[in-house]
Amino acid sequence: MSAVRTFQLDMVVNGAGAEVMVQLGVGGHVRDAWFELGALPRVEGLLRGRPVADVPTMIEHLCGICPVAHHLAGARALDAFMGAAPITPTAETVRRLLHHGAVLQAHARRAVQVDAGQALRLESFARRVMVAAAGTSHFPRCAVPGGVAAAITVADRDFLASEADVAVQQAADLLNQIEAKPRPSKLPTFTGHDLALVDQSGALDLYGERLRAVAADNAVVIDGAFAAEWPDLVAESRPGATASRPFLRALGPDRGAYRVGPVAQLRVATHLSTAVAESARERWAVAMGGAEWARAVVALHAAEVIQDLLSRPDVVGECLVAPVVPGRVVSGGSAKVVTGWVDGARGLLVHTYRVADEGRLTDATITTPTAQNEGWLAALLLAAASDHDISAKSIEAQPPAGLMGTMEAAVREADPCLPCSSLPVGRMGLKLKVIDEPGNTASQWSSTNTSTITGGRAGTALGPGGV
Image (tube, rainbow, N blue to C red; front, side, top):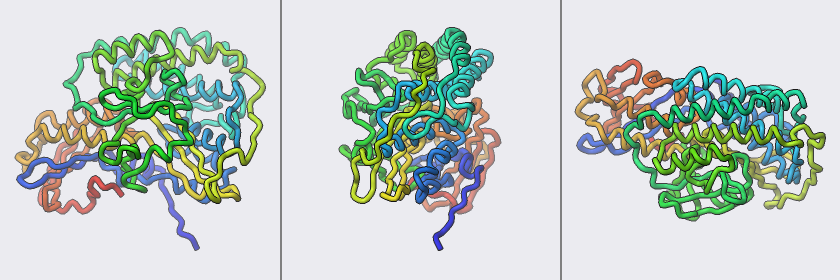
């Protein structure tokens, strides 16, 4: 009898909480730091062995924070398996509307601390867009292999179109407020690569078909790769681990480190296709703005894209599903390997499936933004820890002044897909565990309830190697 794995919902969503590990080396100096993801399971096991027919109703429930992104990335992989590419113009428009609504909703929620009234009104608009496209604002019922289940109704289209101008203005107002905020001290410059989806002209396309990558010096490393090429472009340095540290194969694990998300989206894109957001992107680039500012620019772009999509006649069209041609996909041995992706609020999400001839998923690899950004986050945390004299504070009840705030800022910048990322300043509940060279827990602090534990073994700390 095969083993059965059971995942509790709170285990999948919350895991062990927001915990940062700092490893001290010889002499008490900071040697390493990382965000502990070891308690979070990878969810591909829920899909392996399943008939393809079961997959569409499962993928939207893989993540309670980013259900739309998983729904659409998985659907695009199934489109490829069924040979249903391209999908119909109506299906493309409805999917894009759902996706940009989800991106706008996520970024609007993050702006509540800036202007609660504007942010909540913008979030409400985004939620109505998602309901119009998917029948719900959370776990979507929109995409089916080869298309969508339904188009937007004329009534929904007309109502949302009448509200779109206001939504764009609200997004612009939030951006202006974020742009005017005093900039915190700059976090360390990322020295790896940035990945994002673009259109044929190089403009940011959150539902795009082409992948572009640029190095820290803006040199183009990947220019226009398609989803089918993903397995040849990216590998995991820690296969199977939650913190899998993906890297660009051509450059190797050390030189091929990369990140995704709003900062990467604005760095990779040659321009934005929407006028107001493009002007904001240019200001962001000159100022070398961070993630909060980048999120506001992408939110404005999403609002403008929604405005454009609602003006397209095919948003209420009748041709919903493309003819499917099984076998159009190139076979890989006895199985077909297919990939689907989207660029979401937290960055690139990739679903790769291996489907056996009998129509079952024999393997699945889901490359999440959290996994792709974990190395970047670790570098931010290491820099934050190295700026403070942690070893000298190991027997004191309070962490060094400013340390926990800097740690929180690092987590918000890299934005792992966990509830803690969007909590107000000082309320993240971030736990910091300092481990000395022999492996003892030297100190343990919390950003909301500071305390110290001394002398015990750090037996549950998995270290940067993950699970």
